[in-house]
Image 1 (cartoon, rainbow, N blue to C red):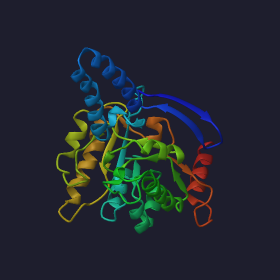
Image 2 (cartoon, rainbow, N blue to C red):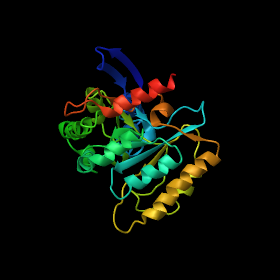
Image 3 (cartoon, rainbow, N blue to C red):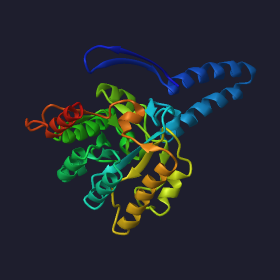
Image 4 (cartoon, rainbow, N blue to C red):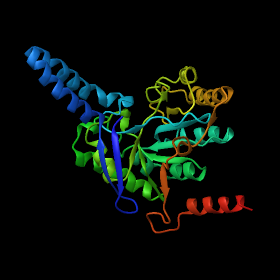
Length: 301
């Protein structure tokens, strides 16, 4: 794990000094290579080669937290798990998915693509109206986004933030496309006052291209604190939406059968996923925020 020091400089901005695992291993590899070179020069290649190999592999292995801290799971004190859906909203899947979640009184987190949110604003409003959380999943979902410059990476995330702002929210959680990270992402997220969310359990559904058996793959090893990764999209006409919905329903039933409770992602990780703004981007009052306040007020009486 890296060593982190946070110093509050304003209400929402932080100055962060963080020794990443990449830096730590780099500091270890260099003196080791130097020491081994005194024994035999060729041995110095070993720690340096391991470090370089990790630099190439680490972006694909979230649990290493190599380039930045990634929240992959919650605590194990309570029997809670969180369920998250990437790549939406989608007019073929989102309305049906929302109905299934409502049927079982489950609150999920939707990591939304900005371009799709812009194309289907009514679906984003419905997601929020039903009490679900929304995170940033980039604006374009470019699979090669992490190979681009820091500016291009930042611009893509910011563009998604701008789209979502019109719904009266400011996501604080970012999930990178395809789960890949790079050395530049940490600084970009610090500048945007955001953090990176990963997952600890996934269905290996390949973006809903492999939905059969999805429930078994999730439930086989599920445990307290898991963050589940599923997808809210129809990749093509080949996908049978009915089979997908049944698999999602089986996951919800199976989780309860194991004595676990699906809770909102923010409660599982004890960290807010999004911030409710007072007004939408068009200057109108944020009705979602007002509705939440009314519900809270009603519950206090």
